[in-house]
Image (cartoon, rainbow, N blue to C red; front, side):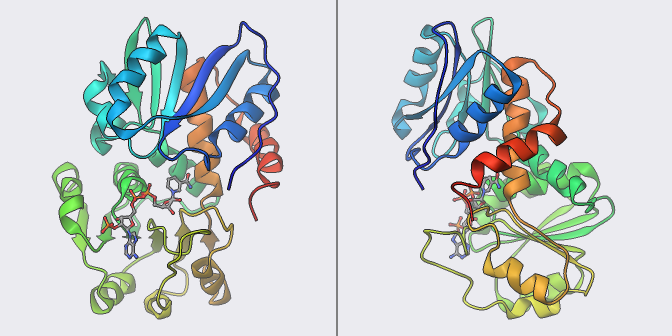
Length: 291
Ligand code: NAP
């Protein structure tokens, strides 16, 4: 994916960016510039490749260049926790920053991934309160989602992953989160008790060689259990297609992608955005690149 972004902006436009390495695939410039144009805000949003060892240098450059803020993707999210002058409660809980706002030169770090997913879940009429949830994977996105669902009132969250050491922090932060393996027996046991399954691994993502070896674990789910995928490319993964065939309510990662961006833009600009009106505008722009 190498999305084309058409930009028209004034010299006075405040600067925003997403930093990452790689970053050329990022949909953030397309989403954010679409939102900025829709809202008539005088900002411009760029994609900047910043190598892993240069996070600090970038923050100094961004201050000097008077950036209003920036989003961060791999591999900068963790390093920014140490570099921030202030952190939001979500960034503290996740120990990861995906949105930075400069306020009077101070670097304020936020994490909008979990809240973005939560909004998408509520919009799809899948409230997490009192639910038992299974999440596959324990990477940055899965961790943010697990912590937000615990905060929102899910009663038990099983994070099934192949490298539990990387996810140990989750248990330290919230004791409703439990770590399990991805072994078929463990997974099946966990799914039998779940109201919701969320894929937080890249398995099934377009351009990623691997898919789930098999999807038979879906048979362990209760008939009404919802199946969500954080992946948005393709819009319908094999996991979601099979789950829908079996009658489960399903949700892809598009809502999370859009709402984490909307939340970031609200922070950058200090404006409240009517997400219900903004979403179709962003979806129309994304339809050129997402299928
Ligand atoms: P990440 O930090 O690299 O984490 C990936 C996780 O998946 C890790 O737990 C990893 O396990 C696990 N994993 C990878 N390959 C696996 C395999 N073959 N079998 C089992 N587990 C495997 O990535 P991320 O940033 O969290 O992103 C994860 C997914 O969420 C991606 O598909 C991404 O596109 C999607 N995402 C969506 C949004 C959105 O807005 N919708 C936002 C962020 C991410 P190990 O630690 O053992 O390697």
